[in-house]
Length: 354
Image 1 (cartoon, rainbow, N blue to C red):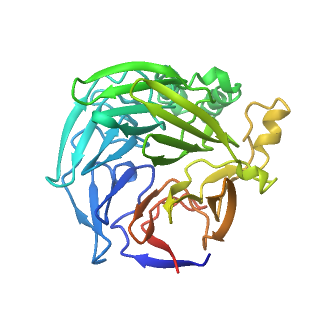
Image 2: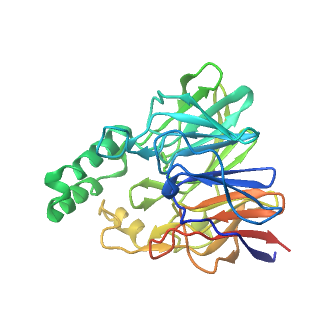
Image 3: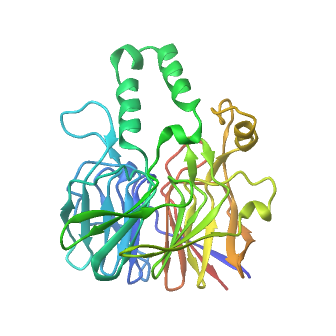
């Protein structure tokens, strides 16, 4: 397979840790480092990005974005609520209508932490969610780090972070339940348990009622090495299968968080993402602060799930992570992200097959 890279018009400013979706070959992206801005690019005309209706809620990073016919749902994320001094896991969600270019609130009582989680739409406007940061754990850390006695003292801040990071996976209590949200009745319901370790920042591929989660974090700084498939219904989990792992093809693979994930030629593709070389062995050896002293690495490989196994089909010119990847009729669009210098990117690229 030969890949072709086409540069699309750049974003007006650097974009990372936000959300996006595609609709009729128009791509939408916003939130994260763009604040409340919501932008659109028509890839058929490739002129420039235009501003759409501004997001009405609290500015947020890493929300769950669930694409649906004619729009998307944006739920949770982390942001600073009016009157508060530190970020918290947000408990509200909104729907964006692409045809009307409008937003409206759909819920303000999300019952669990969804920051960094994943979701899918099933029949009859039923949304199903897995994963996500524990709200109490996250909020408590942010309050500690923003305490004037801590934030103005580098030693205390370092000690606070060390104590937080130096814990086993289970101590973070990430969401290990499966929840359903009925858009029409506004009701939340626990419909099952996630048989896999809960993730944050996993690559997400949706196909009908199937949600595939590729790697992601299982605790801050430590990535999963597993790809998981969940077949879901509004009533609960139908089937759970562990898929082939990238590490089977690349023994030095450390797992990915913030990777670009979408569909190319009918198959799941994962590219970019970030990880820490040595974190897996550190954790296995009992060093729970597994990425302490390690440098974050930004991946360049492009992986595609072919006949049940991951195959490396190419490489990016440079490593990057934490942007948005969207499928359109003639390929996948990579929007923004962050490079190895921690710089939010404005670049937008189309990857297609020749």
